[in-house]
Length: 637
Image (cartoon, rainbow, N blue to C red; front, side):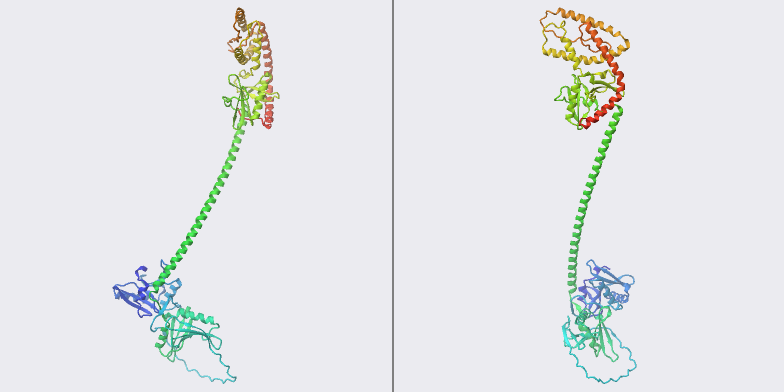
């Protein structure tokens, strides 16, 4: 049965009537109700019944089950009020209790209904008004009389009787109802006592312990116990003496006697005296108490909500702080990972570079960039015939021929100044024939230019054959051709040609030696195979020279400026241009010089194989020394 099936407690209290202990019955609105009261307080309430018979059956069920502790169910409502319900043998709820402020209060109330079998008492709660009327406490019958006792004679006092101390009243006050008051005094034996009196001054009872209390405060404490337990009728126990007198005890916590009355001549007088002490709650007080309890609970709930909100805020702040710490830790961990990855990547790159360098060394392609890296680079601003560029923080240059073709590549320099020193070294040594050589590595041929200290300062792109790698700087041969043409008096007898035309012819002749180099190399190889067979191709040259002489002879009277034109002979084997010659003697002399050159070249070739290993080691030592001075650096082919 839900708590909502009952009416408010005030509804039952307003219909309490004069029933102070036991069942009370009333009807209202066509429904019938009952209560069970203790000390003029409502302890049990019923739901509304449709008939009086049904209500009376409910009363009988309560009577049958009220003494069984197993029939009580304790609970707390949504507002925090403690109560208990009484159930029948079929577990059906037949009544419910009033509200109590604590679980202990509900347990004590249930014990009261069970007849005090546990020795417990009930404290009064709430504001008090007089219950009105006499009490109806239980009276225990007197013990059966025993055999009469023999009276002993009193001995006469031999010493004079000490004067008795006077009684001293220390405190007095009022009980809440019926004009009852109390007094605390110190007796002549220096013990402390209390008494409660009617409005007319007659004593109702005094402290149960006739030995009294040692201190005034102890007596005052027991007075408060009377205020607490006195208003409840079930806390009283009546007694009858063997001579037909009546008295009662007021019991406190755990059934301990608090006060004992004087003797009364009749039951009615005793019940009337107890009735003066009984109280009841003020009508409407239950609602006020309930409102106060609700307000208190709301206040406590608001305080709890504030505490919960603060705790939640603190938890949120803690979570936010932890989140920030976690994020900072994650960022730091990421930073460490990035740093480790960067170190690993740098190490890997370094290892790859070292591996590439080692592979490059093993492949014999030397320590230069690929030829394509040197092509189409900007011309050096301060050095004609050179290009320069920067790659990956390192500096390079290339030597170009008149057609802009890359003839020499440089290694890497760590600074521009080192690169410029390398360019100047090339300019200084490129016109010296002895500084040029051809190197063979892994089936490829390179034209090498070295400085005076035998350090390599430039290298050509790789060639498939040695003849193609025999290119050297053409400035010296071109100058020789110009000198030969200028000193031929039989060929040029007119005024010198304009400077512009002379420069043009010089450029044409400068290209001839560069092309003749591979021709001469090829001719040298051929001479080794055919001996003196090369003299046969001189005959066409002699015929051409003779025709040229007749042509120039016939033009001696011309006024126009004579221009020396290069004479080219196409040789089927080499298809290269040959520098012009004037006479057979000059050609013979040139052939002799060529034979000497071939002989020297053959000797150089014979020695070259033996020197390759030594030169490579020397070059590595020179490169290491240059690196230490901030010069060129390994760069790859």
